[in-house]
Image (cartoon, rainbow, N blue to C red):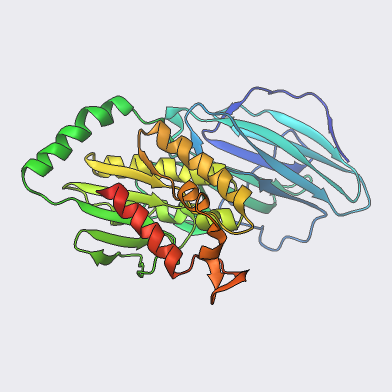
Length: 369
């Protein structure tokens, strides 16, 4: 049981600026954060009240409202009084909670971000009762999707800065007028100069007969295959390596197969692809973008379909062409046979057979003509 007591002093969506979310055993309305670099206070004895941040997004849009929560657990048999302090640009709303013995619950906090909040530090700190001793702390910082990303690392599907703190990437909705105004003239200018367009296929390894590498494997005179072998957040960090800065280029983003198989939230995939398109167009405004949907996976058609719809929606927002591998494959008679192992129609593999891979490449090449 988790019960809120006392006066809630702040109920509106908080701007995620210089936020420090402090969780302490109730003694005063707030407690000092202590050492901000400490994940756990030095020499701290175990405390029955623990907390963790849950649902912190990798991406958030400017002015969008997203919720995350602080989960509080009391491992003791006695009631513990807890204060959650939301430190936001000088505002310090306080939530006073009573946590019954051997129970847990969550405090939901809504967030919105403004343009002024970029590169601000945020964090959660747990302090012991009546002291400033830090029991646990997690920091996170806001960073622009179109800003510097080279120092960001990916761990367990989340972004981390060089100091080990979590990163939340903030994106603005793309100005389509700017893109449409300059992309086509730059594309035509490149063709008039006789520059051949570089064609880049960013796809899950295993969907093609040809090998794929993180640096690109040339499978034709004008087509390179790049491996999407990590999470979408991992691939986003590689846009500047993949997309050439100058000259005509075509980028096919064929993500979603692994994500559908692992049943990851389609919204996470869509946000990563959205940010990737923004980043690619910032780097090379003449880059032509195509989004390929993942082909179906035998037994996982609903998960694939959800990813397909999410990708179609992103492509529609960016006016990007769609290569619908899902419907092309699933409309074939007995399409499951394209996944059979050793010709056995009752045993299916995770990836398509050689015949299925050939069809996928054929459909992509047709879209690139």
